Length: 123
Image (tube, helix red, strand yellow):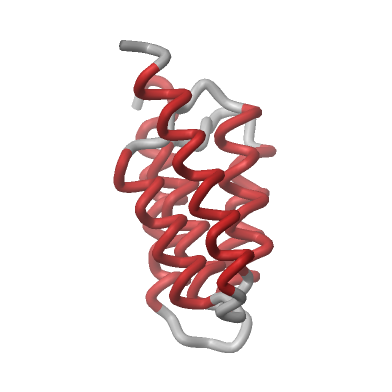
C-alpha cells in the first residue's frame, strides 16, 4: 500500500501482541520491533506504534522506557499526542512505577504541560 500503511499495521500488530504477552522480556521484544520499525525506510511509526510500545514497556514495569518513548514522540516527530496517549502515560506511571508520589506528581505535571502546549497553543 502507498506510504507503508500496510507495513506499519503489521509492526503495530506485532508490538500489540508483545504488549498482551506476559513473558518476562516481552517489553524488550516490543522495543526491538519499535527500533526496527524506525530504521525501516519504507515505514514511518505512527501514534499507534508509539502507544503500543509504551504500553508494552509499561507492562514490563519499564517506566523509564515509557518516558523515553513519549519524549521521543513529542520532540522528534510531527505527531501530536492524543488525549488517549497522555492519559496512558499517566496511567502507566501510576500503575507500574515505584509509587513515589513526588515522582508521580512530577510526571503528571509534565503531561499537563504537554497537553497545554499542544491543545491550548494551537487553539
